[in-house]
Amino acid sequence: MNLKTVKIENVKGIEEREFSLDAIPNKPNILVAPNGFGKSSFAIAFNSLRSNRIELDENNYYLGKSENRPSLSISLTDGRILIADDNQNTIGDVFDVFVINNQTEPKSVVQSFGGRSFAKTSLDIVTTVLVNTIPERIGFDYSSANMKRAFGLNGNRVLLNIGELFSSANLLNEIVAKIDFSRFGLVNNSRTIAHGVTSINEQTGTGSDIKQWIERELLPSFRALEELTKLANVIATYNFSIISDEVDLYLSAWQIIQVKDSMGGRFKKAVKYLDYLREKDQLTQTISSFNPVGDRFDLSPKEVRNKLTIKWPKAHEVSNGQRDILTFIALLLKSRRDFKKDNCILIIDEIFDYLDDANLIAFQYYISTFIDEMKRAKRRIFPILLTHLDPKFFNHFCFNDNRIKVCYLKEVRLRPNKEILKIIYKREDPKVKIDLDLYYFHYHPNFDDVNLLAEFTALKLNTDWATPSNFWKKIAREVRRYLLEDSPFDPISVCFGARVRIEKLVYDKIESDEFKEIFLNEKRGTKEKLRYAESINVVLPEIYFLLGIVYNTSLHLTEGQDVSQSLGLRLENSTIKEMISNIFKDV
Image 1 (cartoon, rainbow, N blue to C red):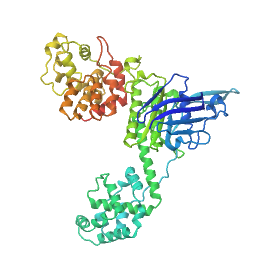
Image 2 (cartoon, one colour):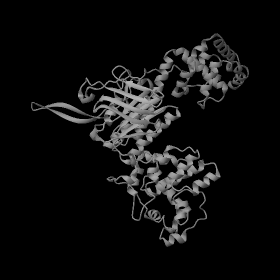
Image 3 (spheres, rainbow, N blue to C red):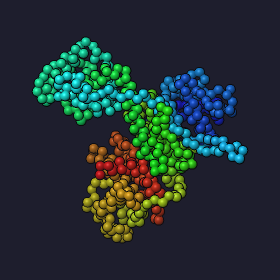
Image 4 (cartoon, rainbow, N blue to C red):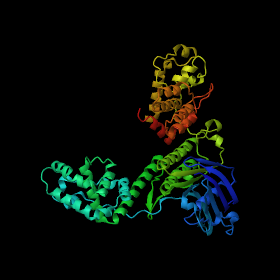
């Protein structure tokens, strides 16, 4: 199912227009149009959808006239047409919709001075509300000591302290979704469980002795209780270290049943609050890990008037790029929380158009990760990106660095290596072309017998690196310096390292010796090698392609070219550094 067309009437600058999209699920869909064509009106139409109709702000009617009644319709490739207008919203029956747009707004404060009033204006970033209503603060009524007393004489011998289980939001959410606790009140279930507890308390010996007796005498009857076994199996899938055997599983299940019985309806509320705490922690960690102004502003989510919000600094206190990427990530996290349906539409309105290329990669990284999450859950998301940038400037949904001009103002702590650059300059020389391509610019598992001393001497290249093994030792030192040390590094070396590391990871995934030989010797560029691996059904992480902005940028240069500065700025981006760190994590 694709989004075939979108038709909009009487919204902002659009009187009536139909957009032919054929948008594909789980892939970024880039809609390109010049300024003034109606991209913002497109976003406003989707942003004005409410549960039962479309509802415009008074400033967003066509020509500013409220008699121009708005409508939005979507045609799907399966033949359905979904409509939102004053009286209906069938779009909401099929899709959850979320719009990410510019979050700044002008604010005016009237002040008096010398008997005269004047307005002081500023540009504010709209507070982001991540959670509209914080769930009721309810904890679980669990005490290991009380539970053991309630169990009886042998409670101390056989019951575990399962407080850890009541801290697992994922476990408890699954229990609430899958377990019918009312079945434990049925005569056969309640009688079997009660008899089992009584029998356990009649036993003597050590805890180990009693557990062996339970396994031998009681587990067959417990296993016969379908809902109890289902609960035990759910617990088992989480592999808690405190639970060592099947007896522990069933007795832990018994404890959860007791807590549920004692709490009644409050149990689900406690699960909901625990799930909120988990989400809050994840949101806080994500925002904190990416906050480029963390030394100046605490942007962690705060609970305000029963909402979880992020209060941003004034717009003038952060750069436009920092503002855009931070608010984008916050709103993307909110959209992920708000999306409940299997089909979702995410509109992103131009906020990425003015990001530097490193933050553009970070932006794409989070979009790609979100898409992957939806695909794993067998859901469909339609990310629709509105931009005035021509797609020819995108490469794998990345800006093509060869088509843009960048001015670098920021000083980067680099230590460019001119000898490395000389190897790039000479890579097409017939004396070394084949060997350089095989053993220096791409991954090859066998280079121990390679020695290019004569060729390197003739071309006035660094003879210390005439053997690939010495060259890769140098590259490895620079990669370690970049990832692990707070010291200047050579970005070109990091580029070599990332490129060849990715090729090695892909090579190791190929099982057939024949295909490995083709990968090494017949496929030339890294991009071609990755595409070949995909063609033989090797599954590759999106990160391998996204890092193309690093490894495809700087290894084809003419004499005198040096892209160390631009490459270094990319490598300084925290998300790109994290991505490169991930591909080297097992080294």
